[in-house]
Structures are given as C-alpha cells and as structure tokens.
Length: 124
Image (tube, rainbow, N blue to C red; front, top):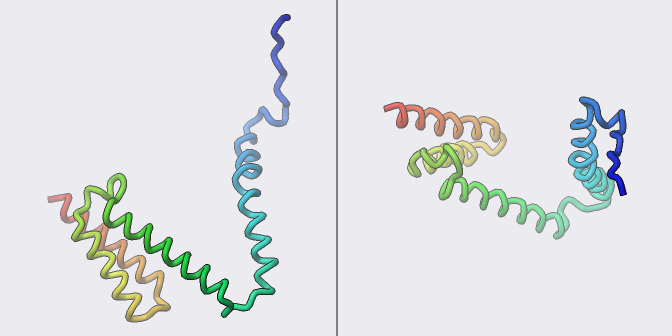
C-alpha cells in the first residue's frame, strides 16, 4: 500500500484558518450558554433563592481567586512584598466601603497602589 497525502482544503489552508478555529472552538461553545442564560433568565425572579445561591458562589470564587493572588501570587507579582499586596487590597476595599458605586475607581486605585509601590520598592 502506497502512502498518499491528503490534499488540504483550500479555504481552510489560508490565513483565515486561525480566526475560523477561534470562532468554532472558543466563541461558539461559550456564547451558546450565554444566550441560553439570557433566554431563561427572564423567567427567574431576581430575589429567588437560586439566584442568591449563584451570587454567593460567584462571590466566594472571586474572593478565593483574590486571596490566592495575594497569598501565593504567580509570576512577577511574587516579587512584590506581601505587605504591599495587602495594602493595595486595603485601598481597594476602603474605597468600596466608602461608596459601592465606585468600583472602577476602587480597582484603579488598588492597581495604582500596587504598581506605584512595586516601582518604588523594586527600583531602590
């Protein structure tokens, strides 16, 4: 039996293949769940126990991620001292406690504290 090479499909072999793969394998599988959630969410009461549970789980997951980033940070963040990471979180939380509507300001202030502090500490 002689080996034959399968000829490539012309429209898949061009420069557009990565974009098509991204849409087929990344966007569509996640977007379908978002659209289904939108369709079904219209029937769910905003104060239902199911949504309260979802909010609690989402908050716990976010808190866990933030705690992991502070206690055991990956990459370049590990070079920043723990006190500075906790200080940046404290700045963010202080702004959020003062005015919960200023989420963007709180995040930017925390980032500025972390980046500015790291610049000062690591540049010395």
